[in-house]
Length: 634
Picture 1 (tube, rainbow, N blue to C red):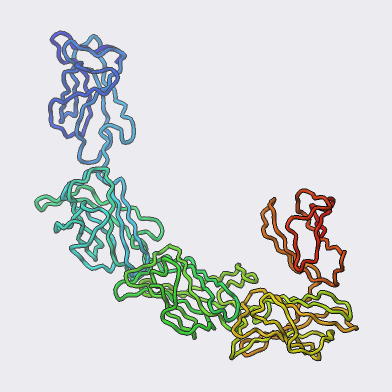
Picture 2 (tube, rainbow, N blue to C red; picture 1 turned 60 degrees about the vertical axis):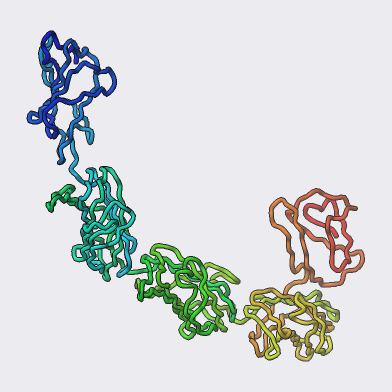
């Protein structure tokens, strides 16, 4: 106030009056005044008098006390809000009793929003949402409801959730309710249960004790989804007070907010694979253990419950050499666990059937990666179309698996499942050490086959290389050879000069692995009229497997291979060079190897480069200081 207000002499009516406080439910009488800070009201006021009918509160000033002019006082009186919602009323404040100056009634600034005096929200829910675990037709589905009321829900009040229609779950007086242990009971009085009405899609539970306003409660219960496709349901919740058989509404029907997407309550979708990919580990014919890897992600869960088994069927892996089996091993957790670690395989149709074991499930919207091994087809073929489908707990129509077209084992795209390279040589290089007529020449072969070549007592694999007729070496069944794998190739080959044919035999019990490099060397004498090496041909003959004749690639003599022990920048590395030479080295000849980009300290011309050696030991080693950094002289 801008004037003081004081109770003078015997006048005990001086004070402050607030009118328009409509809705407070307290009975008439005196109330306690609380100091709320700033300048203490202490014993300034003698009492606060409430009149319900007139919606008036009078704050009386004690005899001899006063409110000072231009002084802020903050005080409080506790009253009880109405039971129903209402807007904030118009409230005024005025001076009462005698004083030197009169203060006319003025409107009270009510503030805004929830803080406005006597603004009372209608009983309802601050939070109310509902969601589901599965959108799969006829699937097992967990419904979860989350509630937070702005009104205390008293003990024995009934909470009814309604609108979950078309389920296949029969009526029950004892539906299990989880996630909110001890908070609710069934109308029959059994804790953590509710009453389910299938036709109305209604669950009724009873509050075990009072649930304070503002308390968040989340409960779940399981139903069996509708068989057909449908939109999400509109679900309501209502709270009623039940007393002596009479039902009165506490919180009116409130529409719950649906969870988004496929988690909307009783949204039933056609099953589909969101991800369906397939690839392989080896693109070569007859590989005994070609690992097929599949990644799937479906929008529905797949479960086996009781006699209803969920199955996944993969079809189209044609021409495998793996025989039929009911227990093909499956790897890749947790998928392998869900299907019991095995599947049924049918060779004729290239079909793999996986069954989810009872009590297990594959969740929707979850990536699963699993693998199994098959023997690859024996013949070359393009990647087939492979499909996957689901039946049982959830149905998904046959979906084409996306092949791993970007991967590479030998060439880009050969990781697509059951793409098989032709039975051929992936690399077939011949290297001549020299081409001088009438001289001795070492011929090297670098071979890499797309197929595995085996030999045993009952079947053979013969590598036949046919040259143009430019070698004068006499016929021999024991022409000496050296190789990277003597146990596989032996120490000799058969040579027929009249046909220019060299036959290298895979030794009994040995195997040339697919996509693996092998090297073989043999020494020939050239004819005097030998001008330049023309490409020979190579083929594989034998009872085990054959490769048709194809021309070999002729490589220049020189460094045929260079390997490094490390490739990290600015660190030391070892270098190994393999040489094929056009002519013999004589004593005093030098071999110069240039190494562009290599760094390091120069050495004196008499210093040996660290760690240089040769096999056979025919080179001495020294360096030239002006060349070191790009070259080493040996």
